[in-house]
Image (cartoon, rainbow, N blue to C red; front, side):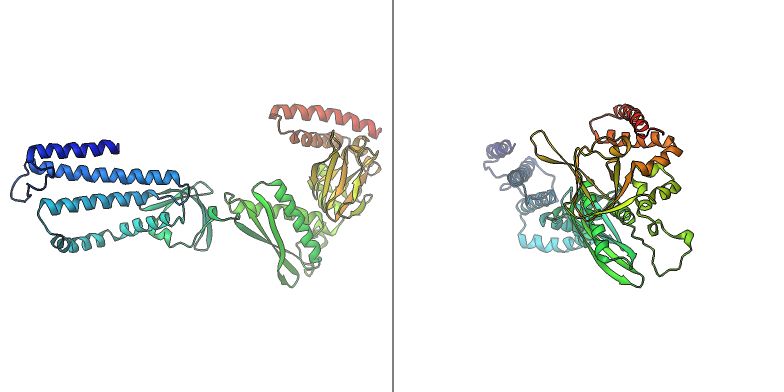
Amino acid sequence: MVWVLVLLNIALAIFVNKVLGTPWGWIPTHLSMEKLPETVDLLAASQFLLFGFTLDQIFRLSIKGFNSRKKQGQIPAIVVEAGSIVIYALSGLLAFILLFDQSINTLVAASGALGLAVGYALRDIIADVVASITLQTDHLVAIGDMIEYSDNGTVICARVIEMDRRYVTLQNLDGAKFRITNNRFLGINFINLSQQERQPVREVTIPVDSQYNSDRVLDVLNSAMQFVGKAHPQFNGWHRCYVSQVQIGSVTYKIRFECNADSHLDEPKHIILKNALRFLQSSGISFDSSMVVQNVDSLHTSHFTPLLNVYPFGILRVLDELEVMDLAKKTKSLLFNPGQQVIQQGDTADSMFIIAEGSLEVTALNEKGEKITLAHLWPGDCVGEMSLLTGEPRSANVFATLNTHLIEITKEDLAPILSKNPLLVERISNLIAARLAHKQNTLTQSEQETAVEHVKTSLVSKILKFFGKV
């Protein structure tokens, strides 16, 4: 296209030279307000118009080539538009001087006052255009960047979806779109999350009764954060737990963590607090202050046996609280150090373990004899339930990865409860079958339902046979 325009300029100059005797059409003409334009005037004006258009296309092509070669630090579109305006303005200025036989000094003097008036009338638009050029040339933001800023004390996280000469268009994590003028946006104290080397760091605070040892509470919170890092991909695993404030009756713990910039501000906080609550409750750590006088009926279950704290998270949630309290009187509490083996593959046993505190790693040997990790278990999870319910040998090795508190439940402990309520066998079987089917991500919904029913039927018969009188 550029070569075509260059040839058109040359062809027009040849035609003007043939008609006027000179290739430059402005030499034999003089425009004035007292006469109508003639052919010679139109030819001269056409030369300036074509010349300005050609320069603009050469400028745009050069910028396009520069941006295609340089992936970072590209020249933004607003600068190209401003450059085009300057090219056409200079072409018009040159045409005015040559066609009207005016001096530059006279033109500057005449246009000064007009330019000042126009600039004052369009001051807001000019300020937005200048701010847009600043934002893009300094690479403060780009389309697709995620930014975070405070608006009247409310933290807003949004993505830049459009930038033009006047506005920056943002879309928050709820999908709502809104626009901010470039000049105002430039004055906002924002953080460009997409340009950070690290993911954004956020934090939550948790008050805990001061009666609990702070080292133990921090161990539980760190365990909860390790679980969150493995279970939720938006968390990259970095976290820090520490004591942030000490008050009469309570200690405030703070958790700082990194998470994906695209995560809604409330979602990471919800996930952290939900799992911290689960791990603290499983460990019997209360949020109530020990300095407050309470009625017995209002006491939290953490004041009782550890089994009452963890049973809602596993297969025992089919039992009611009275059945759990009766079962808790017979259970054993076991403590394991990091690296200590809890279960050995192939052993015959009739008990299972529920994690009250800490973490377990389930491993096995593959066909090459190499150790592989099958799963990580956390407070509320159980292990060995198939041996408890069916008497099958242990199917894997289990090791403690942290200081771990386990609750052991044996066949002898559970048998009286199942004898009184045989329907519990089917409900427990259904929970186990659903969990096994859920682990097979390749199954469709209908295939999972079929697998659940098949496994449940098989488990019910095995449990009834193993417990005999149930």
